[in-house]
Amino acid sequence: MPANKTLARKHQPKGIDILYEDSDVIVVEKPCGLLT
Image (cartoon, rainbow, N blue to C red):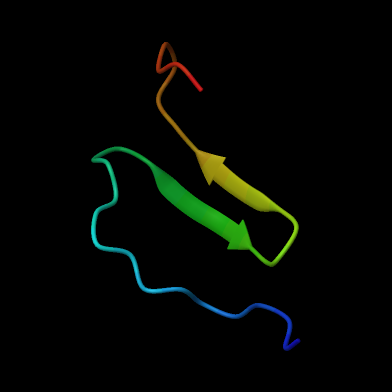
């Protein structure tokens, strides 16, 4: 399986940035106070 395969997203919530994603891990930056 290729590393860093990007998947198409239909919707990404406002204020959330995806910094890194692979088949095992996703790293996001989110506003303070937003539940995970």
